[in-house]
Structure formats: structure tokens, C-alpha cells
Image 1 (tube, rainbow, N blue to C red):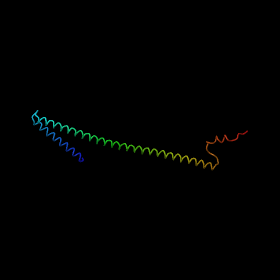
Image 2: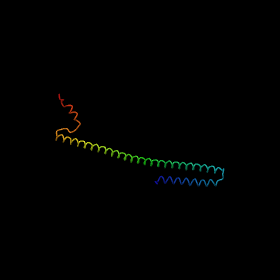
Image 3: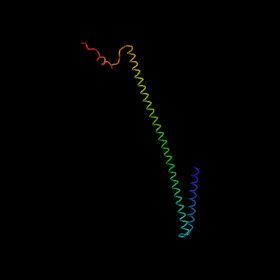
Image 4: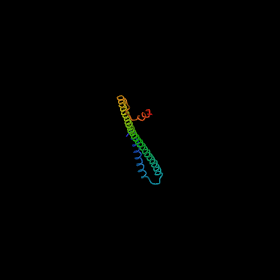
Length: 140
């Protein structure tokens, strides 16, 4: 507890003790006298002060609890965002790696096809067969 909380508890205890003392004094006075009415009014005022102090204390504690829960929620959201970002980076990295692997695999196949062409001098792919057939002169 900090110093302000100790002072608040001390004031609350003083008000409660004063209320109890005034209640006992009021109980000793004769009912209906001016002294009794004045003491009852003073007791009522102190009761209102005690009620107001409790209301303020409850509001203060509610604000503290709300602030702490908001901070916890923010921390959880930040942790979730980090996890999501990390997952996104991981998936993105996997796709980039697959893309690089596919490119390297394709280049490797094309490279070997190029070597076959240099060795044999013919295109070994079936892709251009129809193109070459259509360019050959027809026999008359």
C-alpha cells in the first residue's frame, strides 16, 4: 500500500470511530430534545460523508481494476499479433523457398535439355514437333 491508501484507510477508520461515538452519545440523549435533534443531524451528515468516501473508494478500485484488465488485454493482443505475424512470415518464407526450388528445378531441366541439344544437335522436346512439320515443304 502506498501512503495515500494508508491515509484513506486512516480517515475511514476515524470517520467510523466518530460515527460510533456519536451514535453512543445520541443513544444517551433524551428523545425529542434539541440536543438530540442536533446530534442526529450531525450523525446523519457524518453518515453521508462515510457513504461518499466508500463510493469514491469503490470507484477508484473499479478504475484500477479496469485499467489492469485493459493492460492485460493489450498484452494478450500484442502476443497474439506477434504470433500471427510470425506465422505469416513463416508461411511467406515457405512459399518463397518453394518458388526458388521450383525455379532451380526448372532451370536444371532446361540446362540438361540444352546440353542434349548441343550433343545431338536436335531438339528433344515434343513441343516444337508440329511447328517443324508444318514448315517442311510438301512433296509435289
